[in-house]
Length: 452
Ligand code: SF4
Ligand code: SF4
Image 1 (cartoon, rainbow, N blue to C red):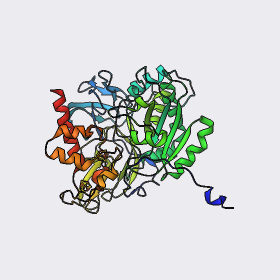
Image 2: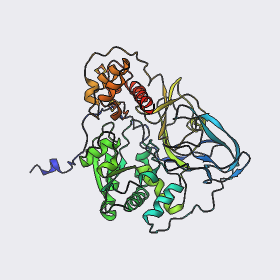
Image 3: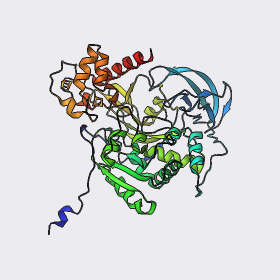
């Protein structure tokens, strides 16, 4: 009799802890992906990934095509870098990097307005079978890194140590940071391409492991995406898990816990519990790398916040300076107080409009006086809200106390190194204590001591 009440009841998976910040995705979730006009000049840093900086292979004055290799991966944990426009190399010098707080060797390339692509980049999709080795090689050649923000070289993630048996590949479609909708738009505009990319990632992992489950994890605020992916799951043999909208649902450890109930051990990696996690954008990039031989020289970003006139989702060439995006989006609204690369919780504030988009840039948020309340930090009132919010089960208030007293060994004993720097504790803290900055500092001090 009451069946209708349960008809649409879907089990929603989650983890313990976390926070519910205001989503603010309504600004851009209905904005289809638009192509940003080609920039006149690009600034392409040779480090846009976790690991060693790439080695420059062109010199000033050289002509370059779109997709041409300009920086070669140096060693195992590194990534290739390609030009995103055609033109001439104007300079190769150290410039400020938007994510690493130092100067990094960067190519300055001037556009010739021709948009000439490397000849080997294919124009049409042709169905084909690839071996695991071929996929890993193509992903490496294309310079693909995790596009959820972490920028870890994908080819390395696809090559777990031989002794690690992988039985699940999770494709992360959570996009749990407020404001960002670039992954969501990709999921509803390019679902089949993402699925084909995910199948390639799964095939690559089959080099060492068989019977790998392919799972898409999507937060329940993305109903349309869940519906679309559910409609393909029988045809392509994968599972879709609906996850509760909660921050940081998209963090690897929390995602694995929510879906598979497995706990990544302290200091361990998803490999250790038989799992690999890849972002939906990364799956799409793998599809393009394998079927089109297209290197990673452009990506989708969200442009949002009260400080920008037109909020959008844009397909942007890597190296495009922020000011080009501001111009295309109609300029600023009010006085800009903060520009953030990434989401408002884990993102990084940048200080110049000349900063370029890099592979790990998920979005740019422009905050004016309406968004930024500069609240003064107060003393801890021992309310315990940070403890409740911490998805890693840590005691943030205690950790902060030790770090303030420079008792780094004690902070280590209280598992500071397990902190994923998600910012949930700082968000929940009524005293507005800058907990994440404190933890970053504490970790650096521990690592410095360990290196000695
Ligand atoms: S930043 Fe670290 S301590 Fe704070 S909630 Fe996240 S994991 Fe816990
Ligand atoms: S939330 Fe802030 S004020 Fe409350 S216990 Fe944690 S650090 Fe202290």
